[in-house]
Length: 422
Image 1 (tube, rainbow, N blue to C red):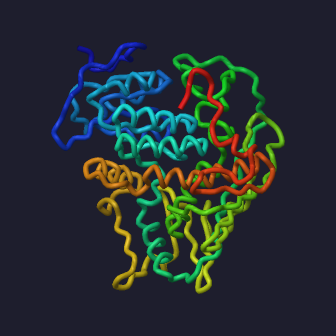
Image 2: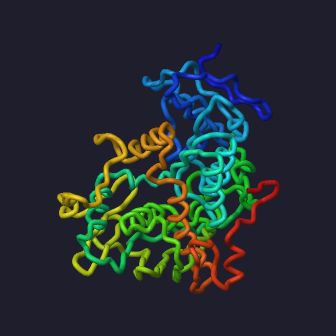
Image 3: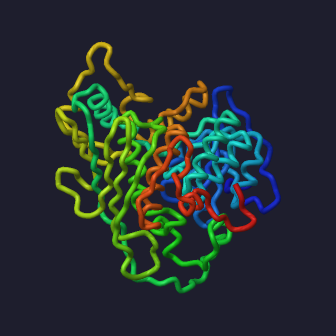
């Protein structure tokens, strides 16, 4: 028997399962490029990617991993639907381009799998709601890979703000560099050998292959990614919502956005973007501002403005820093305390995945549960929609509808390419 995995052809289900010990969570990985590769566990039983060259490359690294104890090599798939048919798989990681996150998560929940899906949570408001509903209906643990909430520095900042050290916070301002630009135009290119371009696109509207889509540049197209506000903005807004105790906000929010369009080329996200959200009860304002970042904020970061003090929180993904006053703060007796979801000494991403595993076993909600991910990503999506439509929008977070705006409500759901549907 060969020690190298083979790609299972279309229509063929993987070999019978390998049930392990009672506490072993059998994991497969879908989308294994970029960040998706970092989520592949040593004992992964199956890998899936539409790029066969990447699939083979990652499979080799899995087989060579000295920590691997699983019997045999992982099985390989190019179509995630075949992988989900496997009854022996308990959970999947999803590290695909953004336009696939929602559909794959919903299908995985329907197949009885727990899910760790990369951020941003979804591409549309309707997709986020579908993900939450699927997780709850099928009783699956779904963790979104916005790992800032598993960073101990973010925990320190949260304790500082939530225990009133800033007083009443009436505004938060996030700073981030511009989106990239390109002068390339959408002249068709040959599809690389080994890439299933039709399956890469999946539910997205058809377009000829171009290297500006794959690999890695999909994020600069509004329908495939949505720019930095959906990328690092998803991290930054996750931290803001946590520190502001805003995860379950069910009121109305107004949103306005301005931004310079790309001057040339094929990218469809604006070069820079300024978004302002205004919330009620309590009243406060959140701003996402792309452009020059103050030196005090590192590569990107936020300032929390209170009536007693201010606080800077730098970044908010796997890396996060905050001011020494927050790091040294000890909550009083009876104050709000936030414990790290995994043992100190591991990185935030590893801690975040461990929290997912722990919650699969216990049934508790993970620190970045899909409902939190949906609420956070909704703010990103609202910002992009306000820029796209060119006007102020009013959105009801409870009803998940725009107020008196039929054109905006028509943008809640995606226009999927046949035969895909959600």
